[in-house]
Length: 99
Length: 211
View (cartoon, rainbow over the protein chains, first blue to last red):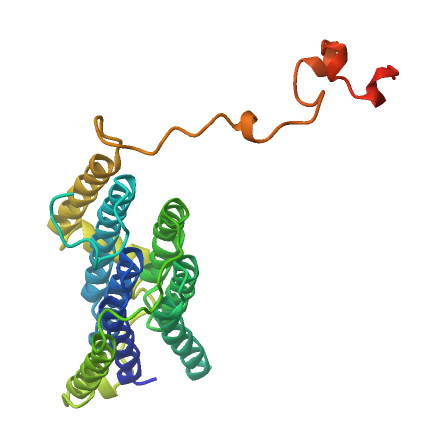
């Protein structure tokens, strides 16, 4: 398979993730869509790593996975804190910094 | 064989991504993302990235998604699914995403890079194995490795601080003791079951015979 196919899939996944971030209002789903965008980027990194025959891109993808895990943990902590304060779990309603 | 696998996994990845956006219930979105991640792991395997594929399945589809499932169960997954933000904003977002897709595809496929049309550089059997990844992590990318470990530590501490119960905040009301709401059957699950210590008035007629 030519690597262009993999890059096409990665671009489509990235754009679907971007569409989800823009359309959805539940912060949980927005975090999921951020994961989609990061995974699209990861697929492109691994594809180029294969194309150049060097494993550096795979290291980059693994570090992106670490950063994504950190982002998820902090984001889910924020959502739990929002839920505890009985604020609406909806990004349009949450327009103030002050809880 | 490779082509068939690629198309199955690629269609699976895109369908999973669509499911994440389309499902109204956040729980189904999480399950759809798990499907997407596993399809992506197959694509990684096709690209000879064995270790990344394994990490994807174990760390992402395993650990991170379990965290998501717990939070969805805690917060409650139901919500407005595709409720429009404003009268015209949601179609605008879809148009923006489509434009971004066209732009990215032009940038990637029209770039004229020789890599795009090749099937990949020649690589030995050790390409992408845990051995090679580990060696790179401990030699060339040692700094990134260490920084990643600190980042994970900071994120874990931050999550605990964010999600802990604070004193002085209105919290959930303490739930009423469960036995008030759900009466248990007589003579079930208590000491009375063994010693027959229930008062005569509470015994059911069936037990009064003493069997």
